Amino acid sequence: MAKERLERLRDELMPALQCKYEEFRLLGYDRVTIEQIWECLLQKKWKKWSEEKKLYELVNDILSLSVGEYMAFLTMESYREQHAKGENDLEALLNELL
Image 1 (cartoon, rainbow, N blue to C red):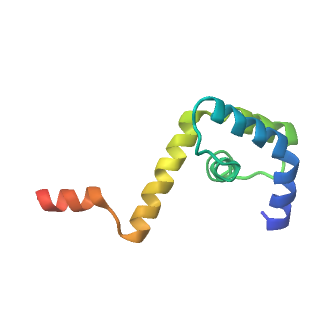
Image 2 (image 1 turned 90 degrees about the horizontal axis):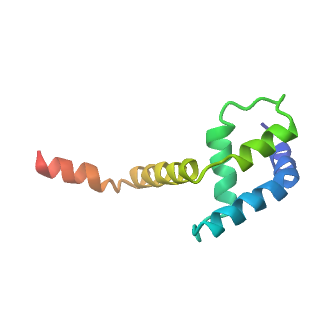
């Protein structure tokens, strides 16, 4: 999807994103950001993007995003970043044990 279209769509969906952000903050997740929520949605819920999705379907996807889905996304992103940097403590530990 074109970057311009994504930015326009994000602006349209900002009230729902803000609502989800505030919900997570109320639940005690102080480090959550709207940008992370947006990336989670793009990579998880909207991975197979369909231009036919209606605005109400996108809003529903945002509002139905669970803390568990969000935390799983952050965990996987953290693992990817560590692996890209070559910082794989688990792999190093396993190599030492073997």
